[in-house]
Image 1 (tube, rainbow, N blue to C red):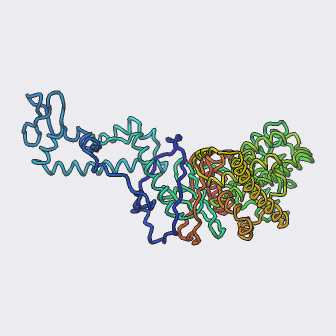
Image 2 (cartoon, one colour):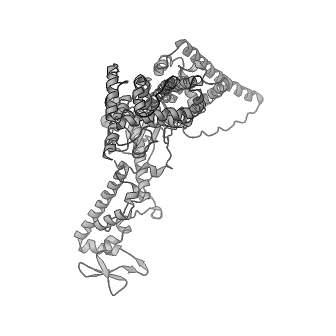
Image 3 (cartoon, helix red, strand yellow):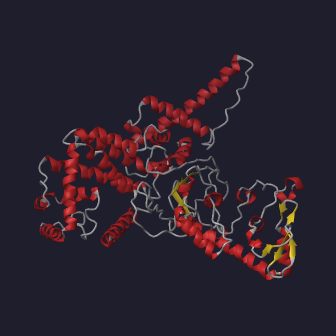
Length: 607
């Protein structure tokens, strides 16, 4: 599979929805992603491929120009000027070959002469074309991996270097990048399509700085969650110095919320001074460590395993200050900082607790299996924690913190997709998260979307039938009313069942719908599509780069997807603090940050 250039060059590329295919899940040995037939007839049974250009009349045929006809220099370097302006001398056999026909220069005669009389030269030219293609592919691969930037490739020094090696080499142009990117996008769409035959899926495309991939999240006919993550790149980049969404979110919260007030600046400034002192004074750190051990602070959360990387972020500083508060007075004084006392300790305790919840939320959101329904408990929990800031020493922070939460973390309830998810989540139906008017409006839109099949495109407005009498018009309106009332009765039944079930926040809603799908047949079909939507597909979520979703109306296949058709990949966006990372699970996240801390410290020591 060809490699992909830096997607940052193509911010205008929008994500596309595509219909899934009805049919049985293919066996693993039946799918060959490298040599698969991507024609319309192969991917979409029942459709035929467009006619070949060779079957068109001569006037409509497109003549594809080869590299040899576009690059004249590869032939001209074997010829020199002659006395006749219309002819050139062959430097090999000194034969004159016509080059000018009127005012038009034609290289085909030069090519024919080399082919007929100097076949070894033509073989070298053909090999040169292959080498050029390989060189261009290598450059594109290096750009996609982040090893070489476009600026470096386009520099005069690089061009002079390549021209010295091969004067006929042509550097890749942006048009070539676009072509390669489109081809890769079509290829990865086909792979996901083949992997999800017959499933109802909410499909999204993740846009990374140096990596491309497609993530499909869906609930199968047995109400089991399925996830497919297919990479465009063949290889995974090694971990580099990067910041994930978790650290970025927490730092943003602290810097833009707490640090915007005098109390916050003073509090965080003193802790930062202490952290810098401990990082630059190994003896002070060892004294503190010994004191903590003597105080039986042996738990991992209370005592860092190593000296490096323990106070390197605001979140970690807050956590360490919270658990070590009773043992930091001497360290504060040694650092020339007034120790924290009384109300300040209470503020640290609440801030650390809140930031810990933010971290848990971000870890969950950055995993492959994150869906909108799986994040609703975290959203509600953070919402309640922020409300607790209204009273106490942090009341001055509450308004600004609320704004930052809505702007950075919470998928807004103003978004229709989020509101619909709340309507069908049995854990939160009875909590009154939405007002009555909004709820009624969303129910109408929800059933309307179900009737229209959740098409990705705007549905065409049905033509209004001309009724010949008021009686027919009345009958039509009554039919619509009965259908609407039936849907409302089914939702009332869902509400009653959810209240009686009293599900916990961490309960699996798939189990609930699996149990009651026969009684709630219409709503279960809607929920299967809606509750599997990735949270990063919602525009209100600021952590995603660009994302689009599509839910399709398909016949459900009884055969669930095979586990061996699912893949996992750690997506990495290098050197960009605001890019979102995806990890397989929370353990991947922990391991990633441990590696990153060690790498950061090693590089700082080198500097």
